[in-house]
Amino acid sequence: MESLLAVDAGLRAGLALYSRNGRLCWYRSKNFGTNASLKRGAHALLGSIPDLKMIVIEGGGTHAVIWEREALRRKLGVKMIHAGVWRQKLLYPREQKSGQDAKHFADDLARRTIEWSEITRPTSLRHDAAEAILIGLWAVLDEGWLETMPKDLRR
Image 1 (cartoon, rainbow, N blue to C red):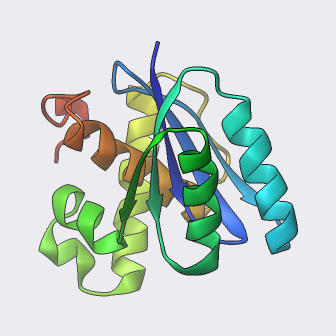
Image 2 (cartoon, helix red, strand yellow):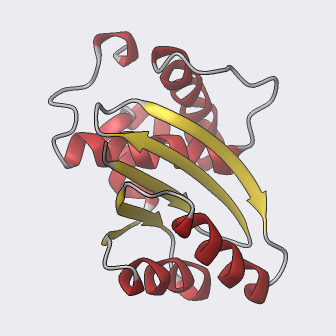
């Protein structure tokens, strides 16, 4: 079964893995601390997902490039996006009036995605993990792994 990894790039990265059926498999936040640790971590994580077909990275700069290089080295599909790309598709304009508003509504949609995917709900959800969940949701819609937004996730 193919999978897709969504990354909110940074030294503290949000990570979310989706299966080919468009459902979230797992999510987490990882503090790599240094670029060297991030390089080792990206190498180990991408190597630990045997059916990985694509990685979608939000962000830019050195941290995103580390993920991109490791994915390309493994001959994986790579998409680099900015937050505005997934926010435009998943959030209403009124929910994006400020960064604080966008984070609040992103958190709510990420929690509903977790519930819809029938995986363990978090006691707390860091914003980088929530954003990775939504980057991945955008990606599975964009790739056609989900034809439309699931009705349980629509508002």
